[in-house]
Length: 386
Image (cartoon, rainbow, N blue to C red):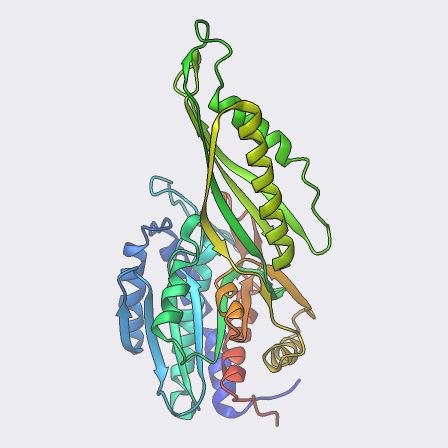
């Protein structure tokens, strides 16, 4: 078993010894509502914690992104470590948590409460090494990563720190067995169908917005998409109509298009546009489509020095060997801008985006250590092997 320099070894030991603090923090965060576009309460808690930990220049921007800094500019590279604040759950969702000997349960417990707790704990551990940090770490809790947030938080962060960030480590609760280096591109469309409406008996035969929407979904499902590079589509939400005996004057649907290949995503967008134009001609219902979200597809090669370092770190920690996997995370945007970025998980879990979500406790220790060592590697501080 390799041994690290005394200071790094001390910080790793401290992370193990303080695991209960991380678990308690995770449960507490999970009980603070943070729907996308309504993250302010959770953001205020994280800002308070960052100040209590002694991070410098703790700031909350107009979107409720929170940042705190270790190290100084000009002394070396800058790494942005970001975990998103928001969850997929509406504010009225009961945020009930519980703990068993092996698991934590709660809506958003892994996506992304344990990641937020992790960056706070790792920031504390790194503060023990602050005098030796050859660079700067910006710890950030971002908004707008889920749903229709359209990565607005990480966009704002990279604009604020434009030209100063040398690498980005996005942190998610789930996924410790992966190193996510491939950013899944996506386009989200809101499609609106508008017709004259009328009485279901007296105006029978008048074009219905809902019937047109149904026709569009039928045609969309016949669009061929490749398995490699993986490309997908989904109609996630449909709304419309007024009553059971009213010919619907209006209906809408939200469509999610995804691919790991930018060209395939563009082709899929064109095919969807053709389908919608055809439905408008066939049904005489007006069809309008607008983009409500766009995430760029990009990738970082596993041969990149950042990834090679993570591979070595995982070997040291006896984590599973991992090739680059695909995900849609805050890492999408920096990758698309040419900034080396990865997304790391803290533990294992399941049932994400449901109220039955859970995470496993035992892997959290390794997830914390992987994050700390990856930050050091990104700052060109290689753990010294005795």
